[in-house]
Length: 367
Image 1 (cartoon, helix red, strand yellow):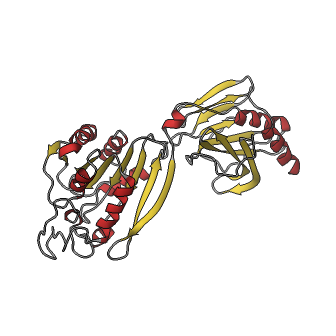
Image 2 (cartoon, helix red, strand yellow):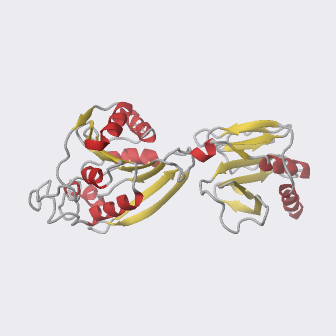
Image 3 (tube, helix red, strand yellow):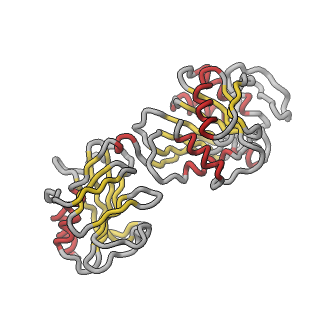
């Protein structure tokens, strides 16, 4: 065992390259050189690079140990941007971790690669009685990795944080996926009216994406968890959140009525959470999902972006003035250079795997 660790460590420390074939990962944006006898394929669905000295029958079976004498590498850009401070010694760009057991991968070696402002992760697995020459070839493969232009255009980060709690104490969470270096930032809100939550199927489909994206995409599945739990339009205090924003606010209805605007603008925890989020995030495009009119609606500076979305999503578009106190109207006034519009889905539930859901996701990714 110690001999195996030493052999791989020495191999990774040396200069790499070789005269083998070039393999291009067009999903994440990197290339590598394959020595004679090696092969590489993309993992379906994820775009991970699988390089090995044998033909892997199931690319998704990371846990399986390679056959005796064989080596397998799984490589991907972890989307964190710059390598963690202190990860490398001066002049070093490949760091071998200890032989350990990793969840989902089994026993192997974790390797960190630092290329420009990208942090890449590789996992190396070796079969029994592997020869040092095989491990030296693994060194050559990893040392030959180079980034293409696409590596700067896409990434696949996936992080979550809690924005706060609803009036009744339920958590309100947001996810960030895609490329934090992207010039375009998009926010998707799946539900603001508790009885109009079909948009959560769209956000679930977005959060299940495994390939890198060219967008800096923020996904807020539910701004109104109390209303969703109670199956009502309003929040836990009986206020219509989409009449409680500060633009053109005016008293509407009374407590208990469907469109009660609250005692004053920003009176609700949920709308204040949204105000803080939008002020700090400053998305280029914000999409608010509603039901049941089956159309896309916008006004003013958001019309062009809404029309494009409607065309891609296969929904009709309508230019309709905003009611008083709505989220998109406040954004249009507060951030005039950005777009915020409403997507009204059809009545009833929507499944994450539905064909229509896929169209909405594709339209979001093209926003």
